[in-house]
Image (cartoon, rainbow, N blue to C red; front, top):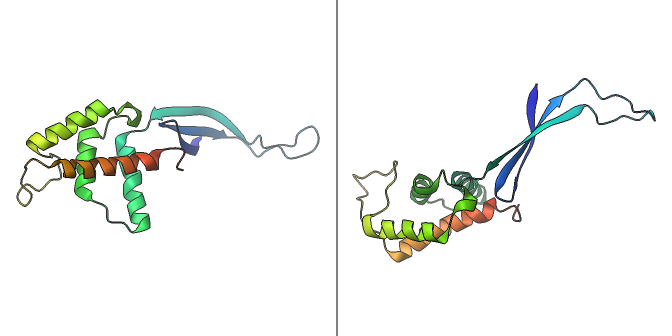
Length: 144
């Protein structure tokens, strides 16, 4: 039986250690209990996605009692959710802001009956980028 025993963020990737549990730990040659009851079987590595960082942002907002801007999170998740956090570039974010300033912010959860699609201002785009920056800060291993 394999069970995840630890997960942490290192250098923009999730590291998960899976272990196979053996029979109870045995005594070593000196008669002391050994911690050989668990074999580390494999370590799985996959990139930390923008969606993961946004999940950390939402959880942090709930924990600290800060208002979470659901529309901003949904828009960022729709536009960048499957992108690796380490793969974000300034050019890509600038292109995204240019698109939003020209056409408006599109995402699936948007209720277009009450919130019409229209271009946003540079200040609104800065607020979106501040939300993304906070999510990246929370996902930074130095922060944890």
